[in-house]
Length: 244
Image (cartoon, rainbow, N blue to C red; front, side, top):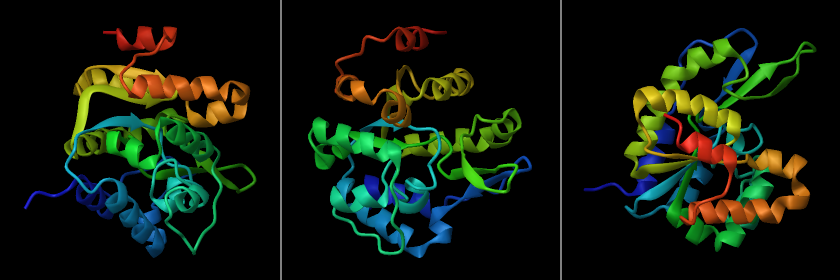
């Protein structure tokens, strides 16, 4: 029996485990192991929006934040929007995540979650949250590229994860990368692994919310135009896309 897109994603998340090394001061957070309710709401989400075998476009983040997918198991989705927009309640946690605000405003403009998720699959090359310890002992969100040694240690896991994402049933003719630094690192992987034919870069939701909020509507239009196949006028994206 052929598995649906939802079942493939759920299987991927169920078996998700990072057993590699990390530099001192870094920690990987696996929400599926830390909170049983995360597994439950994640399954509800994918059964609700991905219960088919359709091919989808791939929107690629960096790695989950501890307040978004690091809690809900759903990329760029905090508990507030998981309930208010998707109708899925999480009782063991309550989170607000800045990137989730932009993403769901964009999804609403796109046509709503049913239409958006019918077309688009979101995940990250490193699909688990990464934390780093500060000098005063606090743990903060970290990106896989924040430390050269961290990137080298997780690179193999990232490549394997991207290949697994593609095997779910993704269109590899064009991939949409969130964040220019993220794009620079993924372009290096793509040159050797030949995963995607073309890469289009979009500004990261957190960057837009924090630094470009007055132009938010323009960025939403840019996302939708790119994702619906209208192309985007962006110098960096053009140079990146045509880079050999």
